[in-house]
Length: 73
Image (cartoon, rainbow, N blue to C red; front, side, top):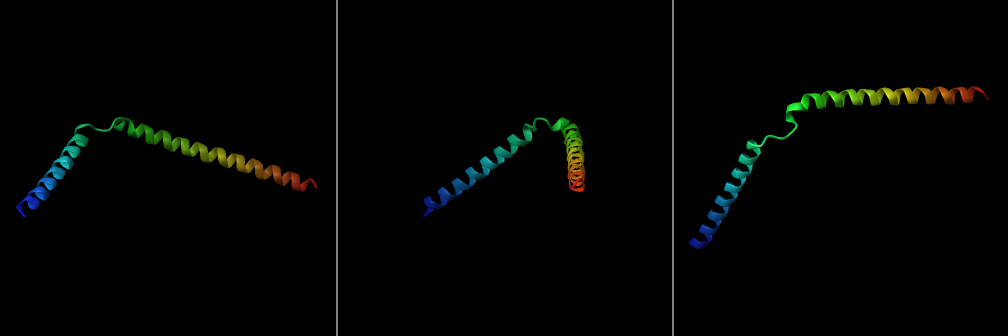
């Protein structure tokens, strides 16, 4: 009976050690690109705003084009 509890205890301790090592490794090596995250956020926001503006212009142009074609009949 003691061998089963010994194996379970060893497995739990090994799992805790692996988790602890993984967490230590993650905290030692910060993610690359974290220092320029603000610039990335700015470019993403500006790009999104530009995409919305272009889509709005195309939609308006298309709507006016269709409206002039319908009125031409």
